Image (tube, rainbow, N blue to C red; front, side, top):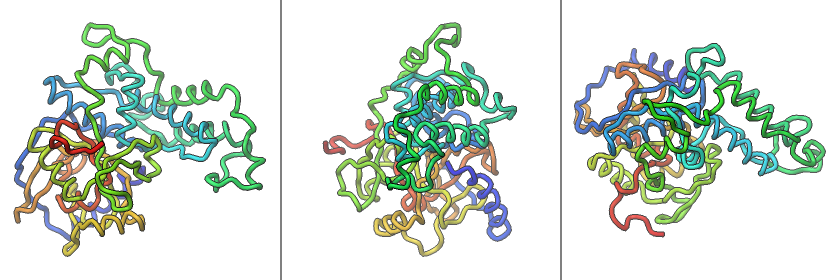
Length: 371
């Protein structure tokens, strides 16, 4: 999500490479996935990561391989985000970021199309891949102008007498068409229909053909500022849809993750990739002596040491030379690094830095969630 992360990670890899020896791994479990994609200069890991997860779900269920269109989701989700911003009278965030719930909700409402049914990412801006450096600032200005007559106030989360004259009395007329025009200009218009493998589909009928049941997916989290075994909305700027996650102790969450992989289910992961840990050539693990307790998770979440800034796909298990457990993780930054876009992330690292996991509820133990 954070656009600077790719550059920052490359710098960290280079520094670490001179100081640490390369780890070697033995694969314990590896589930089928689709090809590695590249979000490039866009804050859309949530989109690329979740579509990669759903592609793996289709592969598991049907044996078919699809390349689903990220820019279709961007188009619909950013319009939904703008609508939410207006309905909140400007007291919300216009953001490139999102969560797994955004992708599922877009497909539920609007459907989806294959990659080939829309312009290739970046092609409308003269780039080879998605590049939002011009697009998103223009979209943010357009959406802000719907609510604020003189631009978005610096502290627009609070209503004051000084700010009141800056807010329009009503939303700017025709704002939906104006916002949609900006989105279509940079990522392309969503097709009403298209031909795929000789058959004509609408986005809705194509989504129906994929074999997914969108009601099967659930988000699990682990924090102590809400009761365990209850649902709550994770307080993160990128969770603007306000979809709840089910709260359980961290060891229980990690056991769910392990058992899901053992049972053949991949898992989408939302968490932190910018905090205090070793990160060498796409390997992530905690410093010596750091134990990923429930208390430390909460402390680092509350003091912003641990944030929600990335979404990836966990699809397998491995061990290092000492037998310490790691996960195979598909990233969204293209085929970079020695593992061609794949990361090895230690179990302890995942336990400390997971904001939520997103998976098929059929992978959960029976009567696991109390409603």
